[in-house]
Image (cartoon, rainbow, N blue to C red; front, side, top):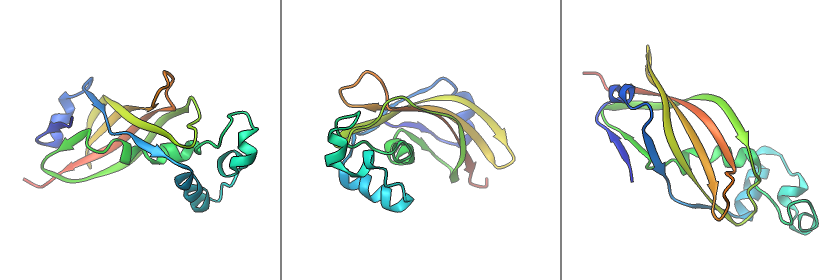
Length: 154
């Protein structure tokens, strides 16, 4: 379910809004391998299934930064803002990797709006995003994200 706002200014009154949860995404070994290629992080716990089977997690695991980099895809459809000229990532306040994501696991994000303020660029929105692992009570990560939503000219 998408939470919709007609204009970026409406975000200023949305602090505390629960945006719900997005769709499940599978983090398979092929995605992990492509991330390793893109970043140069070829640590065996990510890319060597045979060695990882005997390692501390019993399988390969996704890079924490892979899970973090999927936030835009995982949050797809949670928030819709009308009269929008652009939305850009502004940064992260805090990120915690709480549990590794095993290869083949499905993850999804949920988000809550934790802050909003007007800036010269537009409305800066703070969200607490939690990435859940299917079948696990403990999340993979929790991130406090910031984005700027700029309105179309009137």
